[in-house]
Image (tube, rainbow, N blue to C red):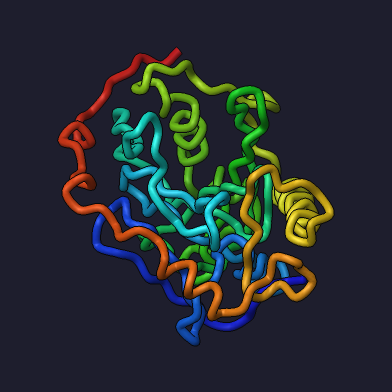
Length: 274
């Protein structure tokens, strides 16, 4: 059960909060959550880029919406942005998700290039960090694009420590403090904020993939997650491309004036580390 194969493209409207829908090479709508296969090749995973490096809009795959488009998170009626917490500008990596997982399936990728939102890249997993978010483990995977010029030199988390000193420390620091400007406490971590190695990370990813299989075949309760897909043959939630198009066509148009980026998105915050 690997979902569809082949090329993928990305369609989105002009404004930052617009609903983003994924398409396959035939121009048919698909779910970036369910229809993009987890594996790109042996030992290589797909990653869907939700947030390009240095940007602020908190974009994510909408797991509860039909066909799971990428759109901006909203809280208390307002579009969410990550603050610029000195010395960091927005997100400090290309941030996204490994598809066909559930539960703790968000990850961030090391890459020397800035990706684009909705881009689907092939990555090598290097390690994983266990952040505690509101009492639950929120796994953060470190991975590198296999097409990155540095990729041959990176095969495990120790390579990151050796070749990119300060990178992992900055990653922990960012995740620890990024919610502070919103009035929230610093995040905590399991394993004393130490990164686990590649094998540990791959085991976690495989475990979430098993949970996804149970979810998409209705063997477990999705608790509001939309499992609509167009390619998973064993899934009772599979729909044909025509039905998928009708769903997307019925979506409300993207907002215009209400989507203006607030001026304070460019504000810098200084916070004394604990």
